[in-house]
Length: 82
Image 1 (cartoon, rainbow, N blue to C red):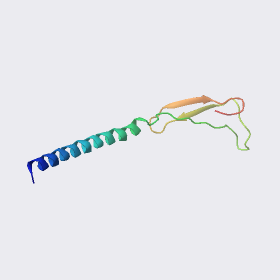
Image 2: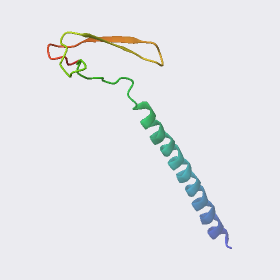
Image 3: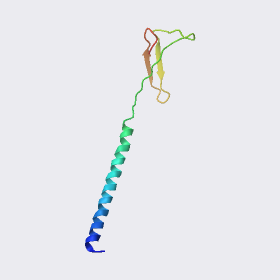
């Protein structure tokens, strides 16, 4: 193999390594973007009713997280929705 061909092969090999490293870095950032996009809060909705299905208005609904023990309350409106 001539000196010039060996030099070109070496330069090509270096370019492939840099491209591979860049793509690996890019993919690692793409993977972390979805992790940071996770939502920490949600919404709970419903209607308060008795056994017969009749709506119970103006009730205070208490929700407790089993994981953290945090308590949230919401007041149902005149139609029982919270």
